[in-house]
Length: 179
Image 1 (cartoon, rainbow, N blue to C red):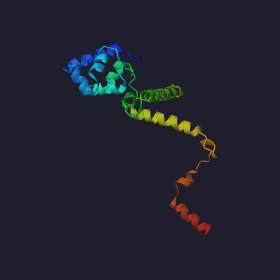
Image 2: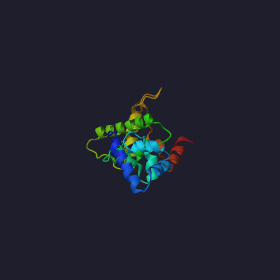
Image 3: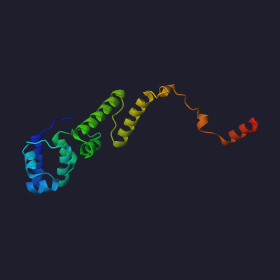
Image 4: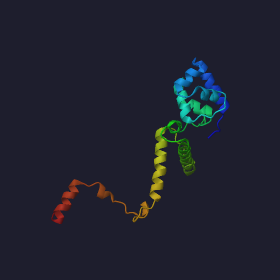
């Protein structure tokens, strides 16, 4: 992740506020933050959380992702998973440390998937990302030990004829077995 550029973020918010023809006090009220706090953000003295950035973005009617990029929380060229990252950063039910841990785990999955299949193109959309993550989780699950059962490769596989049965063959089997 990029480092936070507080000064340019504040300048960007000030520019957006002026374009929206809001006074500092009006934006602070609309965003649900104090007037002095917003002033400190605009002057580059305070580092706002992702949640505060989302509130400011909503009040300015701009995308939160735009502010995240300006803040250096998201990389502009990091389009893969942008919506997921934005959702994690904006989630009010988890704290900042938990957000950073989730993003780090997500990044490690992406790196692991890229290392596992260097010749394959990286997943480009939400569906492709979900499939790639499911494959990674599935591969890990196959390696997990289940108490009393070993790993997935140690467990017996069901034969295909146990899953899909032919009704005519079942009738013949019943006749020959006397059932």
